[in-house]
Image 1 (tube, rainbow, N blue to C red):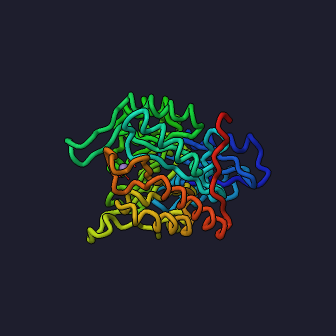
Image 2 (image 1 turned 90 degrees about the vertical axis):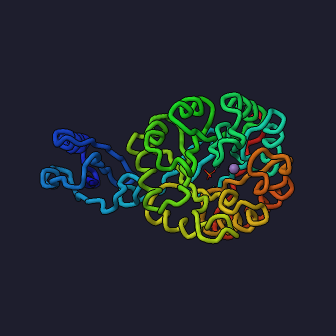
Length: 346
Ligand code: PEP
Ligand code: MN
């Protein structure tokens, strides 16, 4: 429920609303806006008696949020969330932000080479898993905490921001010490204890759509993060399981405008995990930018044939550089701009 205050409502009137909400046993979230202040009522099960709030001085309107997710909905917040990252990188505004790098951190040389080449081509955020959620327990599981140290080294050298996955609540602690963005992988989208830990971590979160999750389920998982007080949340479409193995997953580009209508959160597109083969990654990355994605996540490897995971979908360095040139043009056509990397040492 959202209590919208009149334009010019006083601080005392807002405080009174907050007090009444707390007296009723719920949490109050004041949200000052450019036009007017609203106070969100959270923790309710949808059966709140709003009459006590409607008559309070300064209250203009009481809105019952109709969706099962509340704080992530556009009803709750009409303006887009812009997630502000270090170095002036903003996700959810005009810029299209590119996150690129290998599937996994494999060695110091590999991640440093990858960082240099994705930066050179124009990415602003380096990806690379230190903790890998692998379907088989016998596949490479990632370097773990030493991998995080290598990522930190790559950031130090290149100035790129870091996005890397946390697989469990302990991992959230380790990842949040190093990363600029904590990634929650598709297989963990409904790992609610992990979501709660990430919601309390004090770092932006990239939440990937589950391998067979509906858009409503994705938004409800994001709600867990906001409910814990983390508002810096980016969603990620990475394909959902379909019936046709030819395309690996169904890359649901129509989820982008749907999410943008339902939610104020930014949405990034990951054509790499969606399609599984590099020849499909390039056209689908172009299409995702055209569809209005706020960013791309693309796997790139200095030497894809030797990759320890996801080599077949990893772009060769020159393919990635070419893709960056193309998406700059596509972004411009729709009134956007691909975010530029900061100069080294900045
Ligand atoms: C990844 O980004 O490294 C990954 C494992 O992706 P997903 O969770 O989308 O499968
Ligand atoms: Mn991967």
